[in-house]
Image (cartoon, rainbow over all chains, first blue to last red; front, side, top):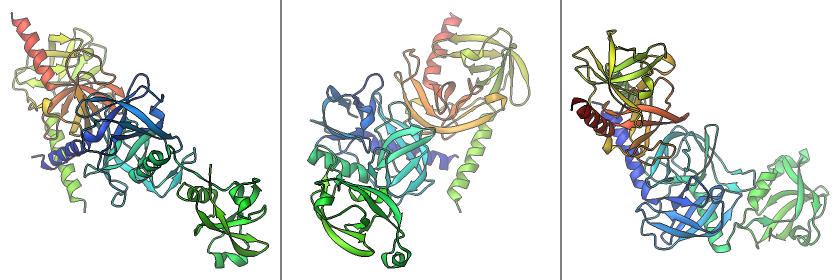
Length: 296
Length: 199
């Protein structure tokens, strides 16, 4: 009797057991502690930026009930992530999964450790999309929305798939909509914060406005819009690279820039210090300029 | 297609029907009604203390039988009340092992939310322990569950994936989070208070 439900029930509990040891308690604000994920063997803990209200007197509670002082390595408010470091964590870090095999409708669990023990809530994947920009300007690799209930203190904890692997980090919940930052983005931000203390953002020094391209060129260029330069800061990478007011940006480093968000995501850090090819439309003709991307 | 889910649904329906047999309605004078759970075949019913709001208690069984009830024992800390009925051969619910429940385990709750008789809601165990957030302290364990408790679920059964009783629905602490008193705490309550009553 009841074998299917019992089977599901036990598998859900196994998911919690698999991921639970890497779920930590993060004490960095008054009243209710938040959650975090033990990210690497050298004691890196990642959590949500908005739950770490102070920069010192931080501590992390592990699954084996040890409580360790934590140092703030850095924050990226644009993706709502904060990176902490603890010494002497003897537990295995989280196993992560990419979103390749994930579909809308799949069962997922949100885990948290606001108290001594790990806790869980159940939900399904509500929406999966492509990359998006947060209001603060951060680039998130995939849009991942679920209906898991974010119990108080769950912010910063993991979203776990059927194999018990971490799909992402749960940040906010508004009116039944819970958003998670995919593990790929978390990994990228963690790496950037560890090596630079922050997330680098590429910088050209231009103000832009999307414009329709001349019809005669649409087919040849394979895009309908570009970004016209409405300002170029003096001494900026754009000016040094020979871009001027009225040029229309078509692509940066081989990627089309049809809208502002495409330019923003092209400038998300990897290109800082690199000389890249910028294709522009100037006086009816397409040309290429070499621009060295600066850092904001 | 979706055979696993069809099988799940069939089991869930069977399990709900089985639990319904032990789910009663507790009327408390003109104060309205809550739910109750048959604990013993010789007329022992468990409900929440806050459901018992007058001395004129009346219990209605799922088969339609009705009887007045007396309060045998009561704890405001645990929000529990044990009632006795002058009826016998009641369909008891099988007891489960609440101490074995882990976060993620599937649970279902039954009651009469907004007067809808026998309505079910399901979810998973969030956690268990004496110090859950937003839980009133009484020294024992609470069981936090992620499901949709509504007024009227109070006193009804919370069951595990096999339909065995693991708790009594007690309070909602948010639209999607509820607290239940686990069966191991109920056993302790009954043992302590009924022994005292007998002495």
